[in-house]
Image (cartoon, rainbow, N blue to C red):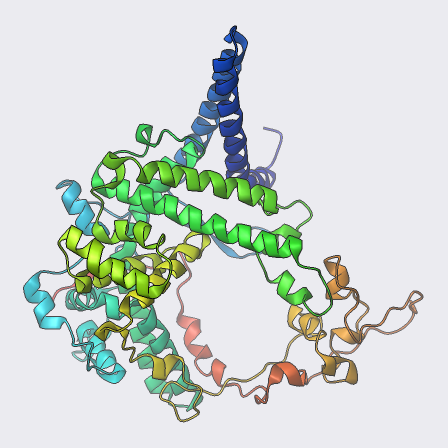
Length: 554
């Protein structure tokens, strides 16, 4: 009472933005204090006072745990979209359940038991379906892969023709095809379809571009549909691990069925990878001398929220190291508890073992000579399992799982060296600068508004102070980037005027922006082809208003 809805929403947003980092920090301090209190109590002959302090810390931790659980309970049942009243931007409010992008309803986990839920977590297809759809990765090329994917995704449309079904519907045979080849499709196929669409737009082959766009969107929908149960189980794991951060009695809250313990471990491992990266970023930011030459690199390292007046995150080296240390202790406690860790899927346990091995050759020797014989599986099966695990994490949110995803990708690459899996037919499309390459398109520079961040950043280049930025930020009465963030001094070419003329007319916006030659790097300017499908966006349905689709059986 006494505050309007907007004020209450702002208070909730501010509180939500700070709750998780502060909870981590408090739990970490409590854990250290509790340990010290227990040690003092054991040393002290009259330890009643210390025991009471330890009990108080436990009560405080329990209160914060219940507060975190209450916040989770206050979430909507399903993630929903709302429009910010001030900016008009569409935002997503996290729900208790992951939404299935096809049915637009909450993900339904199997009622048939934990083994079926584990199968949902790591989906596959029956042997006969795999035999039907699995392609030979040793010889297949990208055009054939794209054509087979297009055929699997196509259905009979309302007008009697064959084509990609309207979003968000998908074909059942497409689900089978993608599952049969998921470890060879995934992220690389997404990027390839995107490049093929952009290449067609550059070449003004707009009908072809629209076909690639429809296939790309349908493939993304299939991937999100297949990964939804995995994401739901990880979300449930976060609900178990998060409120108990700092509690090293893992058996009291991280036990359960095998799919639950697998999710718990992946949440812990993702947390470790995330905070280890934060420690590295904080160490670089705090120990690197800041100059005009490296200020952009320093600026781009770590979470940019640290530059806000009242940062809602933990970003100092001390804070990040403490949180990371606690996350590592929790993960170690989980792994060292046989009833929690020892029966997890082999590819999951291999991640833990592999990260202790130094060097690619030693890793492959360990896999072939020790891990696989002990598990009774082949190296080929283990590599496929890890690639499929990697693909599940590709579909997770980058924050906080991007760092673990990168680690899994590197593991997959290291394990494949010297095998048929090392072959990568996507490279000629994704990593080929040849203008005659099959995935090439001509990129170009854009006009940017006078007060845009792009022009602001462009002022770092030497050509900017010779007019090369076309009236960019070097000629504006605005602080340099170095001064804005308190380091590095002025950017070359910026001018200070302690006595600006109040009667001077505002600077005129130039119609043509000449990009600094260092950033242009020989590229043409404003070719315009990126907007060639702009009119198609008029039919785009707003997020949250997409009608449910269906799985089409043919």
